[in-house]
Length: 169
Image (cartoon, rainbow, N blue to C red; front, side, top):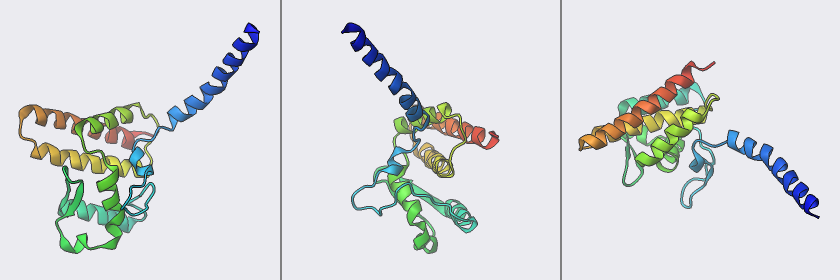
């Protein structure tokens, strides 16, 4: 009876190991991208860049002035003409619902990025770049020296991860 019990436990453990290893490899860098929130457009895993025109539009929006307010989680585009474009709806969803806001969440993301050995997906890469833009904004807004140092460290870690991903083959 004891050997049957031990064999059943051993078989459950051996069955569970490949499953947990597969789940660990597929850890999602931005889990909130796969959750829909009440009152937001139903975009599951929203992507901003679907074409070259979308990439150019994103560049133009960031260059003209893209601000993500920390307290309200609201995206603000300075150029009114760009802000009125319907094609920016996925950008709003990503900036307001998907990107990490707190320093601890951003540092946790940096840790997951360092553990992530494969190349980032297109969606994860653009979210990491937008997180870097948000971190740079928070660095510019921070008042105390200690806070500035923490935000600068997070910005540097994000930069290193993006650079590593661009250099990966």
